[in-house]
Length: 513
Image (cartoon, rainbow, N blue to C red; front, side, top):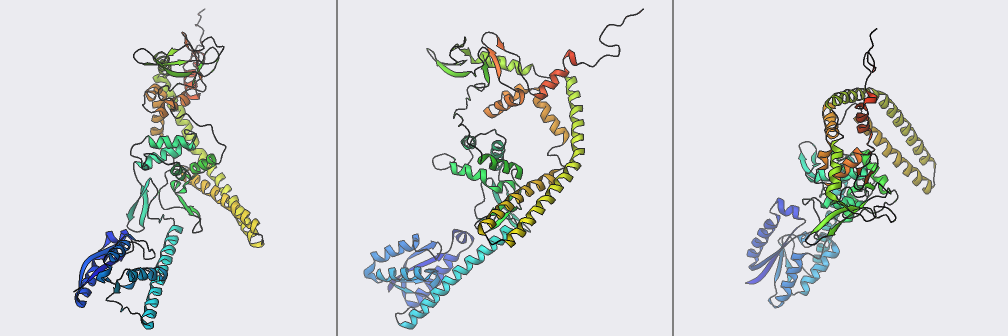
C-alpha cells in the first residue's frame, strides 16, 4: 500500500475549543484513504487563518514530506479551503508540496495537471478567498454596528473588566475585581494630584502583587499611558479606526467622565518634577517638617552606628544654627503623634458639628434644582453651537476649515457629556448623609489612627487634610504652633474661651444691690 499523510485546519483556537472540526476532517480523510488504498502514517493540523502561509502544522508537514521524498507520499485534505483561503497562498503551498515530491488528494475535488482541472482549482481557490474576505467584512460590519450601540466588541477586554454573558444584550463588560478597584484608585489619584507623574502611578500599581505585569515583573510605561487615556474607564467608548465618535457605553465606568477629562488635561499640561523613587517610606515627615530656626525643609537619613543604622531628621541649610545637628526619628515623630492627638474635638463639638453638617447638606440639596436649571441652559447653548458649526461645515468647501469645525464640535460634545453626567447625579448623593458624616467625623476624631497606616499614601493624606502649611520644629523645643486646615481650625475655635456663647447674665459676675 502507498503511504499518505492527512492535513486538517481550522481558523482559530476558539473553534478548537468549541468543537471537533479537526477530528471530523480527519475522519473523512481516513475514509477516503481506505477507499483509495492508502496507508495513513501521520496527521498534521493547524488552528490558523487560511490567509497565512507560515503555519506550524503546515511547515512541519512540508519538512516531513521532504524527508520522505523518495516515498512519494500523498497529502489528503478534506476540502481545498483547508490548504488556503487565498489564491497566492494556495499556489505557493501547492508548489511547495509538489517540490517535496508529494501530491494532493481530496474527497471533494479531483486534482489534475490538464487545463480544465487547473481552471476548476483556480476558480475554487478564488471562491475560497472571496468567502474569507466576505466573512471578514461581515464580521467587521457587525462589530462596528454593535460598538455604535455602546458595546465593547474586541476579544480581549481592557484590564479591570471582564466579559459576562447577558440574557438580552450578549457579552457585556463588568468590573473585574480586584483589578477594577486598583485601577479606579490609580485614576482618581492621578486626577486629584495624589500621583504627580505616571511613574508614581506605575509604582502604585506595582505595589499590588496581583496586578498583571510583564515577564520582567514590571508594569510597562505604555500600559500606564493606555490606562490613563482609555475612555472606556469612564463608561464611554469611541473608535477612530471605525469612525465611531465618542458615545456613552453599555457598561459601568470606573470613574466619571469629568474625572477622565481632568486626567487628559493633566496629561497635556506642563511636565512636573519627578518624584523620588523611595518617597521616604522610612521618613514620612521628610519635606513636610521645616527647621524652626531657618525655615528650610528638613531632610532625613540613616546614620551608620557601630552595630546598626539609626534614623535621624536634620537641617542641611548652611549657616543655620541647627545645621547637620540630628534629631532622632522616634523623638520628632513621637511629638508629631502627640500633636495629632491634641486635635481631637470634644463630644459636645461633635454634636454641634453634626448639626452644622446637616444644615449644610440640606442647603446643598435645595440648591441642586437651581444648578440643574443652569446646566440645562448650558446644554441648550452647546447644542445651538453644534448646530451652527454643522451648518457652516455644509456651506464650506475648505478641508482645513472643515477639520477645524469638526475638532470644535468634538470638544463641545465632550463638554455636553460632562454636563449630562453632572445632571444625572444631581439630587443623588454618592453616599447617604449618615455614611458621609461618619466617614468625615471618624477622621476628624482621630487623624492619628490613619497616620498609623502602613501605606505612605495614607500618611501623606493625613498631612494634607490636617495641616494647611509646613510644620516648624525647633530642636530641643518641639513643634511651634501648627496652622491647621479649616475643619480643625473651626472646631478648635468653637472650643476656645473667646468663642463661647454668652450666658444669660453675661461673662461678668452678677452684682446684687
